[in-house]
Image (tube, rainbow, N blue to C red; front, side, top):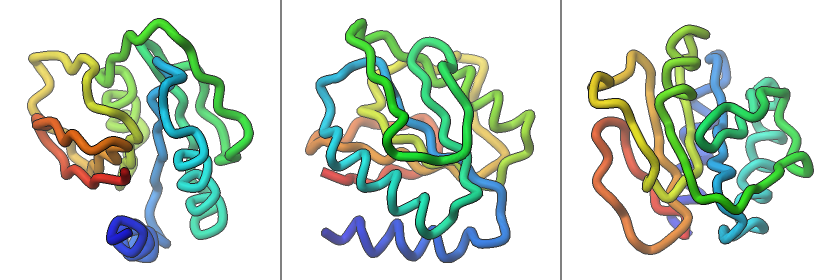
Length: 136
């Protein structure tokens, strides 16, 4: 459970920053209880966090609330739109809950903000940029 302490520490460092928690909603074969608990942690510690739900497109951007996540079953995911949106919004930090099996445009070789991939399974894929935190 090292990841709990790491996320807690990261959230404490984000108190004066503009952040978003993104959830990959491309499949319903995810540990929804774990994801809801992470969302609740963000909701309690950083209530001004934006919750972004996305798969191959951005489904919603709203104030954080754990009981509002809707999952789909198509399995198609692209991170490019969310990462570009975060850039446009001048976010300081993005946390993205995903298995990192989605698409990122070849033209995108980095972002100007902190990016943490929160991976809810035991397989840790390579990421083109950002840092991976295993939350399984």
